[in-house]
Amino acid sequence: MSIKSWSITDAEADLHQEQFSLSPTDMPGFGDNWGVKRRTLRGGLREGVDLIEVDTGRMRLAILPTRGMGIWRAETNDGQMLGWESPVHGPVHPQWVPLVEPSGLGWLEGFDELMVRCGLENNGAPAFDDQGQLLYPLHGRVANRPAQQVSVILDDRAGTITVRGVVEETRFHFQKLRLTASVTLAIGSTSFTMDDKIENIGGTEAGMQMLYHTNFGEPMVGDGAQLVAPVREVAPHDPHAAAAIDSWQVYGPPTAGAAEQVFFADLIADGNNQTQVLLKAADGASGAAMRFSTAQVPYFTVWKNMVASADGYVTGIEPGTNFPNPRTFETEQGRVVKLQAGEAWTAQVSVDWLKSAAEVTAVEQAIGKLQGSVTPTVHSQPKPEWTP
Image (cartoon, rainbow, N blue to C red; front, side):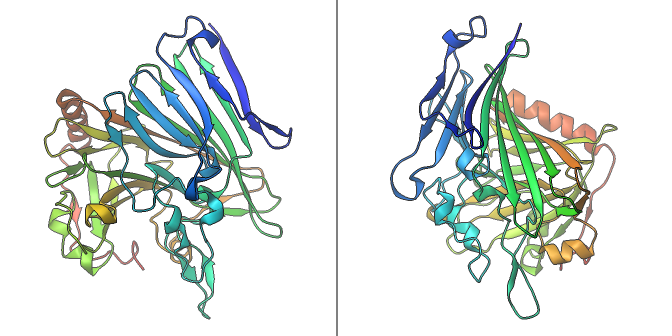
């Protein structure tokens, strides 16, 4: 039994392996059907993006060190894909994403991942000062910051493959935060777990936010798909979402020109603060479950973008440290994590790609147990302390 580690990138050591791969011959006894491969994408806006593909034997997961250790998509050997079809044909190199354009919406020019971290200084809508100058851009900067250290760890006792990256979001005279992001997969599984640590590496207090913007599209999401969650309380983000509050957990077909809908929720957890949610395909034969701790990411957002397929039909399932409102509002509501110098915040979030009706039913039953006898409070209008 052993643990082996390989360094792929280390900026301080001037190390970057252009050619890197692992196979069963590199870890005898670890299994016969797995692999890890790093490659650099070429052409168009993806030119120069590093991609690390982890193959568990059942699923291939594409991780993007160049884009803040985000996860581009997952695929199975029979050609099924977990993720969504964005009109942004990425992965887009950060150099082409104008984060600080005056509208604050430049982040959208790089958005096409299955899972993109939003943070670290802010994770919500753009915020502006009284003169209309941009204070915080949409969803923050971390997704467009390349990792300066990347390694792969094999643990043959646990039967797991971990890709770990270190991403820094620092600015002279301002905050200095470091994200250590680990993505772990088990041999033979269709699941992955993200273990994150965010450290304040500066000498003064720093404010931090994190949102796990996890995005699913067709074919899993379609007319009749459902979100199953143990809900204590839910509210629409705005009047448009309020008009659809009765169907907030149900998805309709792609509709050209449909306006996005956002709902905020407080979820029920067990005695160890663990909860889970389920995105269930219309036929009930597949789905995606997300598991996380409400002590780490206590606020839950559902984003429904039911537009035409060509425009990016997708839903976002998004646990976070706060709701993705402008940071100025979230600061007023006390939903910014304060880290003293040297202090760290940690979180673990897992995504399970469910490949059978039996797996879907098992998760749905577990969520039913969490819900128990609690009747959800459903607000017909935005909740003032949740929405500006």
